[in-house]
Length: 498
Length: 101
Image 1 (cartoon, rainbow over the protein chains, first blue to last red):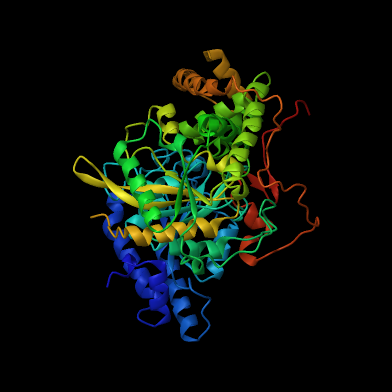
Image 2 (image 1 turned 45 degrees about the horizontal axis):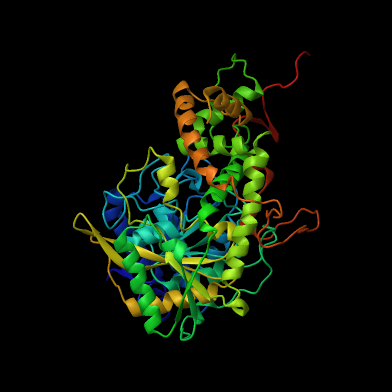
């Protein structure tokens, strides 16, 4: 049987009932990787031997009645932005090629403690800078629905691996849409949790006031199962929230009758492919049939959220990437210097960075340094910090039920389905505009999920479309509930043909 | 609009060596991106406070002591220094930063 094609919750039950072993599931996953990875290129590192060893240990535990829980023995892939002890972690960048972390990220540690089998590190836009995975310094990941197209990004390797059944679920990171965008373009579920819900310790930082970690999965229930494991306070990340972690996977069956669902007009204005819009309207219609109250509303912050994001994010990037200077780790000209060469410290910094960073990382470092530099700080950075307050208030008002607000908001994730490889790679502004519906969420800090709601045809090939369901701060259970109900009602059940 | 000298100045601030070709490319591309920011120029923000921490947490502290929360998130000094390009024991070697003897 092709165990790799099942969902986590199905496999979890089958493992519990002794229908097969974790080793069987992992072998099926690696067979699939052998068969389709040459076409998809989702992985930077595949961890076969260690994974099979861990799977055997999981099976032994289970036989001895000492299972670690529902995810024990389940094979999952990790975005190569999270540190894995003893396993190369690159951020898909040349400057970190060969870097072997001495410790695990908290998320990785928590997954291991739950018995999860880590089967590989997935490709991304280098340092998570991008929406297509074309900015990886190593390889371009292909969309499983049409290999001529991008998988979205930056967690494109994770989303493609899940969509192509090369793992049962995956971990991604989201600074402006990097979980939701590829999930939408690959037809899988992607959850961006509330800021501070999941520890970032051991994750290579992009923009620290925006970064979150979350699951990419085949179903909403699977995303909920992963979130239960990875969420929670961590003394090693002082931004984590000291709030109880709910059993999200058990809160999915609530009826959504009477639930107030907001449809913000700004997110359905010009610039969206009409069939993408139709797919979202169809999902809204389903919610209405299930008894939800559809509320037309306005989120005017969309007009300036993209500018806010593309000022704050590169500013924080330029600061976070300063640590890659050729001294303590990563690519360094010190490795190649001859004994007699007289280098200054600045030479080491400038040349190691000039050689090690790719085009997009350099672009963002330059942009961020510029908006933070004397003379421009007030005009750009300070204004963006103030506008962030307005973005935040816009969402607070939207979810204020006592003032006619809504329980959740529904929007498109991306204005288009997956675009062709190379189509936008030389036009950063075009590429950035593709993030318009996902970026406002991160400055606001609220949770949002991308769930598949339909397909559109391009050149005779069906491509998936996702809807974004946004909730209030710490409202993960509400958006997961709506996403699960929508998934059941739409019953899409399609897989890419590879 | 940025000119070439602006780009070279920023590259110096950012400790980044750029090739001539890169300078040309970024002069055009960064100007395009800055153009996109024009839309926020006219919004009145005089009465608006800045937001830097979205959940409002501040001054999160813990005791200043060596700790190992869980084995896999910890490591020894030697493990920590394994990725250093140039080292002597527990010291990291860098080019000299002071002139003279």
